[in-house]
Image (cartoon, rainbow, N blue to C red; front, side, top):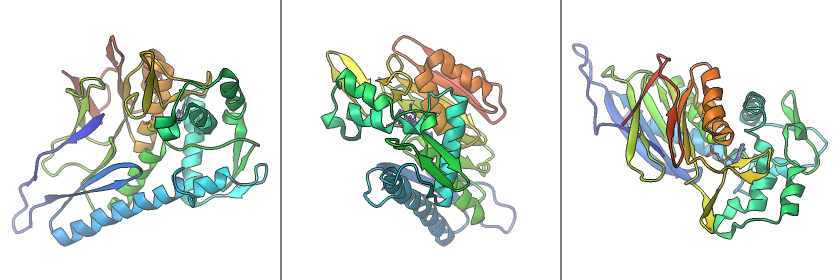
Amino acid sequence: MIRALVSAVLLCGPALGQEPLQRYRDEWTVMATVLDVSVYRTDATTAAADLQAAHAEIAALDRRMSLYRADSELVALNASDHGAPVSLSEPMAEVLSAAREFTQLSGGAFDITVMPLVDVWGFYHVSRASVPEARLIESARTRVGPGMWSLVGNSVVLKSGARFDLGGIAKGFAVDRALASLRARGVTAALVNLGGTIGVLGARPDAQPWAIGIDHPRTQKLMGRIKLWRGAVATSGDNDRYFEINGVRYAHIIDPRTGQPVRNIASLTVIAPTATAADALSTAAFVLGPEQGLALLRAYPGAGGVAVTSTAVTRTENRDQAFEVELE
Ligand code: AMP
Ligand code: MG
């Protein structure tokens, strides 16, 4: 898990005759997690409106992209007439096109068509999860893969049986959209933390980098820090949703190429220029494993990361001016 390390209230030296920028913060539950937004403003009324706007943006995306809302655009899309083009809202078209890009980049490790597999393994209601029969996994696998859908302008065509799960990318996308809405409102410095997917806007008024803590996935103790001047951070882990049978942990991220939950990696933290990229890349690199996953991050401009397994912590070297990772 990652968290924003922040001081209680941060004041910075105002220019003569100007009000100081102050940090304002609020918290909500949305997208089945905690949304924590901070903005720096000189007055509380404007800040309160900014915070509400960021929350409203994310709540609206949740209404579109949730699999848990009977009336979401995503649920309608999954239930639509497969084979015929379905027209998409602007954010849905954008997130699908980003998802497509990360599927290609990761050689299919990141794949939003993974839904039939997540379903068969029971991860939508983890209390009902169990190891499925092999024939059910095989049958689900025939409905998973990048060939199951195509984007045509602002429409999507799904092949029979294909269903999307945006759980690996929607939080990052939502963080980017919330930051864009804050920027459009004239906010010059902000941090949006949606359940550990964190994006920042502008520089902190004290000119210090934003500080993000990395917790160890097993001990939950702070194992490192990320100094972030710009960009975003996301973590994929085997702690979020999992079940255990005979000492084996089965967690919610599935390798679409094998149909099996990913094993032998506990967490993968990614720093990237956008939260969408950090979110999708962390899921992708988690599937690929520490070695190939970190190689994927090294090849992606402005990205880096840290992988934790039961035996080792591995990382990319610091080489980007946007961030610095310091491990304990
Ligand atoms: P994250 O925590 O961002 O890594 O996202 C994990 C969630 O994405 C899971 O709970 C599933 O809903 C979905 N998912 C599982 N496996 C994959 C995969 N290989 N590619 C894309 N999404 C996945
Ligand atoms: Mg992700």
